[in-house]
Image 1 (cartoon, rainbow, N blue to C red):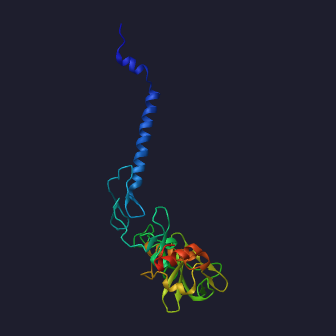
Image 2: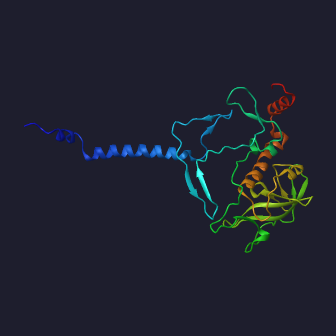
Image 3: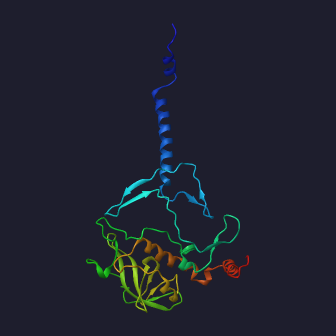
Length: 267
C-alpha cells in the first residue's frame, strides 16, 4: 500500500524542529523591527558635506507621541534638519579630516563647545513643575553642611575675580545642586554647572575659563527656570573653555591651521 505524502512530510519534521524554525523567524523579525525603530531619531545620517547617507533599512512611518503636561504632540521621525550655519571649515580636501573653527568657537558652539538643539523648554518633574529652580524661590530647601558658596568670589583660571556667587539652583526632585548663580560686576547673572566649579574656603574656582570670558557665557531668559536648550549652551561653553580658553591646550598644529585660515593659505 502506498504511503500518503502527508505522512512522508511530517515523518521528517517534528514539533521541536518546527518550534525552532518559528523561533528563528520570530527572532529575525524582531531584530529587523528593533533596527527599524532605532531610526526614529537622528536619521537619516548626514555626511561631512551635508549629503544624506542612505540606510539599508527603510525608515519607519512617523509615529505620534503625546507629550505629558499638555505640551502637545511630537512626531518621530520628523525629518527636521538643523538649519544653523556652523562656523567650521575642513582642514583638508579629503574625508575623515577634522574641521577647524573659523571664528570664536566658544560663541559659535562648535568643537568641544558644541551643543545639541534640544527643546527650548524647562525639564519638568512628575507634577509638571520645573525641575531646576533657584533655591531663593523655592520652599523646603536650606544649606545644611559644608561651605556655603553664596557670597564667595568667583575666580577664573587667570586667578582673577569675575563676580560673586548669589544663589544655588537645585534639582528639586533629585535634591541636588545643579548650578551656581554668578552675579557679575555689571549686575548681570550667569550660571555655572556645579560639576565644573570647585568650592574653596575663600572662593569658587572655575578652571575652564578666565575672568574675561564670564560675560560671554550664554544668558538664560528666566530667573526662575532654565530650559534644556539653555542647559546645553551653558554646559557646552564651559566645556569648550578647557581647550579654547587655555593656551597650553591648543597644539602648535591647531594654531598653525587657524593662522593659515586667517591668512587664506594652506597649512
